[in-house]
Length: 542
Image (tube, rainbow, N blue to C red; front, side, top):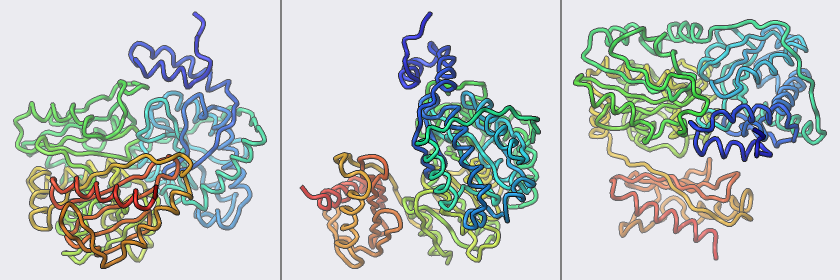
């Protein structure tokens, strides 16, 4: 039967309209991915380059991005080499590159294209196969590799693939590296480059899970012995939802086999059962059902995204997003494990952690959105080393751990919290909030005219920080609040005297203004949202 699809985008639309019925059309997607040579704009956002498989994420374009990386490395630009943590190209060839993927469609095939091109210029390669993002970060350090290529779009829908690049410290590549990759790759796109496919001369496999386990044991941030003892002896149940992702099998190898641990959605499914594979409130339903059917005293359910860098928690009574879990992590690591340092958080994250940090005397570092901005506080050589580093979009790392966000770390930390406190997470969180204050974060936004996208929108919204300086009073739902602090590292964040706040941030790629807010009561959120929208419309004008 001849296909009616003339491009991958329309084919994906059909597939995703009924994944179970139309999964056979993935063979057409592969054909588009192999034959389509149309150029794409390469942009490394907060976590790599992403595109739709067969549309802009094609075999030719993956070869172009790989070729751009090779050109960058061979040029030995001093700025790039410093950011890479290497001396020159010869060191890169000798130390080598780890290449792997999550369990997306065509992950292995795309990886072989990358490996073939790297080997062609004499670079040593390891093939990780299906692996989680934090395993690449730990693996780079354990192997002393020069860098890693991880083909994943993280939590994006099934029609997407991605390309992450990590230098020798294991963290997400900084702008010194990604800007250069973009520059070279987009030049090649304009030149209609068509790099030849090179078959790998050999494939040297590496078990990143084993290296990750060694890494955890060496770093000693997590007490694996205590965790395993707790699972063996406590009246507990743990449910881990892998959403058909690359985290499957990882926790079992780390924790050991136990009848007290239930694993959900571990089967192969390139289409993720038709759901958006993210650790959302809705997607927690499966794990919460397992917890509800158990009579165990201590319960933990988690859901992780396909590449294992995002996680959400529940104990059956309460779902706990990273806005709250990050504050719990800081409290636990500081009070119970006696780690010292700073707390690093993205600017849109709940101020629950600020209240904990201020009372305990812990310095707070607020950064732009993007986990790569935590690098200065996660490096072993840092003078201001993070006890915990997290962002509201479900990513976390911590003391002496990876520079990448790590869902497996979050899982292990949550179990250790239960083991040490003897309490469910919601009880522990309730005690923290009773002591340090209650906070209710949320987010929303509005659409604006498309002509404002980019710098025009940034310029218009910048007036908010000028109009509402420190000490200014603001009417929020009939209550007069004073601006206590103005933070402009990523948009404009106004913190008020009662601890509530709002942040107004323009999207860099869409005609939207995003609102991040936090109230001190659940009922108070509406008034803070209305204030953010009013300020935005005043700044945009008629």
